[in-house]
Amino acid sequence: MYKLLLAALTSLLLAGCSDQSWRTTDVADIMPSLDFSLVDDNGDNVQADEYLGKPTLVYFGYTFCPDVCPITLARLGDAIRQLDDETRDEIQVLFISVDPARDTPEVLKRYTNAFGPEFTGLTGDKADIDAITNRYRIAYEYGEENENGDYLVTHSSAVFAFDREGNAQFLVRDSHPITDVQADIKRLTEKS
Amino acid sequence: MANKALNVTAQRVTQRLALSALALLLTAGVAQAQTQTLEVSNARLSLLPGNTPGAGYFELYNTGDEAVTLVGAKSPAFDSVEIHVSSEHDGMAHMHELTSIEIASGERFEFAPKGHHLMFMRRVEPLNIGDDVDVVLEFSDEQQLPVTFNVVSPASM
Ligand SMILES: [Cu+2]
Figure 1 (cartoon, each protein chain N blue to C red):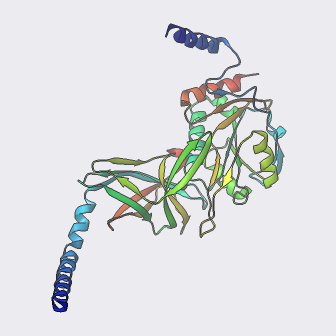
Figure 2: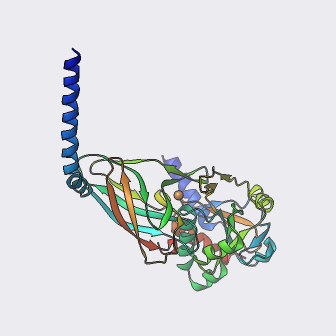
Figure 3: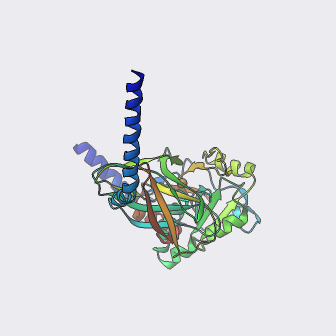
């Protein structure tokens, strides 16, 4: 028991002084840096390095998803908007579609606009989408089409955070308290 | 022997007829009585611009003595409405359709973000934030419960 307590205290102290650890899940050493070649929600071809200079949050989803995706983006938007203006203006959120057949730039633009100016939708050829999902070892899977031709997509649920240089830093899961997410986002904007 | 069997059948038919007549007479009243044992609150339809699907969230409170089974929903504002549940396993977000949900006597069942929801697909006409949408919840005992959903933006929930 005491040992456990001691261990807990030590890790708390370490977390307090260390530059390296995040309140959410630290992935700095296990995730590759930001790299992709996709199409943005204006229909322009874009490369990852065009997004460097600002801390970036990345979420993989699809617009036909009415529940998990919009709620995740809305909560992220809320978390960002509750921070001070400086932090807010620094952050950008990329919503990368894993359903390019339905998520055209036009559909994505209308969708991301609803969440705020910091949100950008990205889509592309299936091969380009696969290049980035493979890079981060993220799976996605299409369900069967119903009689209307509609289908659901199983996709990763985490939000990935990159620093200004595009280095992976932390990932946010549903289970992380919003205050931890906010603290990490704020620290990310203060970093370097 | 044959006569007797015939008689019994005739008797059964008469009984059945009487029962159906009674049932017919009572149907309206019974349906209403059952409806009153179900309370829906906080019904909102989370919707984005365009033609992407919406999610219906609400609380269904069964104040009756018996369990009820929700088997579907329909709305004149959408071509298709399904009962869905979202879940998360190993960092993956899943969503699938449910054919029914049983709500026990006295139970408050919540349709809430990232859990159970009504999935509204293919809107018939454009909808705006603040609009009211008529929805009918359908139960296994044939009862139909009309509910008004208020259109909200997920960004404001
Ligand atoms: Cu759904």
